[in-house]
Amino acid sequence: MNSEEALSILSADSNYKVLRRIEPRSVFSDKLGTKTCLIIDTETSGLLVDEGDVLIEVGAILVSYDETTGELCEVLETYESLEDPGFELSEDNVAVHGLTNADLEGKSFNEKDLELLSRDASIIVAHNSKFDRPFLEKRFPFFEGKLFGCSLKDVDWRSDGYPSSSLEVLAYKQGHFYDAHRALDDCHALASVLSSPMKDGAFPLSKIAQIAQEPRFVIGAYKSDFSTKDSLKGNGFYWDTTLRTWFKEVVGAAQAKELVAFLQREVYKTTKPVELQIKTLDPLRRFTNQNQTAEFVIRSLTAVDPDAPIIKDNQASLSFTPRAKSLPSFAKPNTPKF
Image (cartoon, rainbow, N blue to C red; front, top):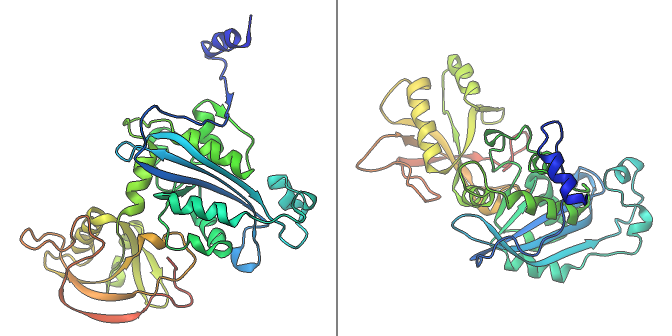
């Protein structure tokens, strides 16, 4: 009996779950890709980019994909590079990724090749872009202004039957395992996960790309009554101590309209236009540590106006009346950063 025959028998027995090692693939589909995605992962000297921690490894895969379905097609290029941080790594840090000071000594990143890959990418995807992007931008300024998506946050994995959104669990549920916490290995694992369709037949990358490009708004319940705080908090609003207002970030025109309708109905209890604080976020600066300096403005809003829609679909802008009154910049101490 060969290994495949043994695996077939075990797979048919509900007492066993067979896991296969993820191997690097060069082709995922015979389709011709229409766009490119740079799947990227990093290893770092620690968790705190603003307190001196730095990149020590970058892995990346440039893959073509079908922009209609999100299906991965072909691996075009791969990248793997190490860099000496210039200081000793802690034992705890080495235990995470297995890279020792001896492994990194004298090494430096191949910046030119990575920049070329970033130029060719329609979108850059990491499995925690909120962590990876600030480190990448700090070391490689050419990542600034790029479109980033996040396979951790932009896909509702739990609704699709996964118990967790961690990459190892996603791979496990798809019948795979891999050697985690080396950058290129993690990229191959993420590519494998993204190559599997979800329950609705769509591929995860289609959802990631759609969310990454949609306009994002921060909406504040301007001068809301104190008695509504529990309702606001229950709907996902957070309290800003500087502007002393409840805020919530939403993605796309549809969510913005729903939120305005909620505020009219539950907070202000009116069908008339209500004054709200609004800020439009730049999709190209998502997950960055750089402050978005656009100011909040006060607008008179209603969610329902068939003759003159307040929030325009497919546009990163809102239309309001009357003329806006400026508020202090959002980029201040003790306020959230986007």
